[in-house]
Length: 394
Image (cartoon, rainbow, N blue to C red; front, side, top):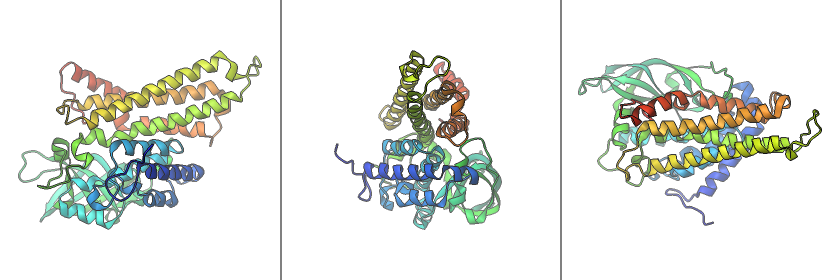
């Protein structure tokens, strides 16, 4: 198979996947330490940067590979085969680092050329007060993944601009040196994501560093007269494309659990009847059903990407709730695979620190994210199917 050359620096999808494998292997090796410290290590973060993955979603004008959504998804899935916490940040760092592509040029140049990593939190919990040509931002936000190693953080705020009748949904980009980081991440799963709390107290942000999420959602374009028309993120619905990684993290983790289940089952002999499980219809049936469920999940994510890539070609008709429903269905299938794997293997899989236990916790943690809640998704999609407005963003 020929290598797929990317748009920016000389790089291929194969290069990025090789980098993803290195990240995953290192994160798996350090998994116990990440669990203890509630964050992946500086070593893993350095590798995310070294492999160009941190910059892979930037427009090519800034010197990055400018990978497309399919390449991005493959990278996230690959890391998740080894460690889902590391995949969480391998997904979010390049994703967040492309946010300046939707800023005015002055703000984009400042942040991207500085070269630091970006964290964000979309929950609109902050307050903004006009101050000259910018705004003073205050608030407290939890679940800020990757903040430990970030130089910038975008925070959700509703801002009342003079020219607008109502407050506007925005993401001001703050320097992390200007906020307080509260290390309170102590959770059941995804411990290595380091999703701590931050507090901002009257942090000044100029207008060129305030991302208008309402415009990004509505137009899918930056606030510029001239922009790179080939840039993939300018032609897909903003929020559904932004959320793409959650399904692929779950898929990569479920893929690993299937592999572990098969390996452990082949060696297992039940004391109750002395039958080798690989020869038993019980485990044969379970593995077959889980494998076909995995294939369904994989196919649904292919459908998800196709809907994103063809969104404008299809007349922008796919409702956000459909993306939401597809993504959460995938995650539910992966949770079901994880739970069934553990229940079928029995008590031997319960020991702490093993891959089955760690991947189960992390996949379940992915499913608790607000964009992964299946009950919310199917309720919203059902409304749209009957012609009612669901009100979700994707």
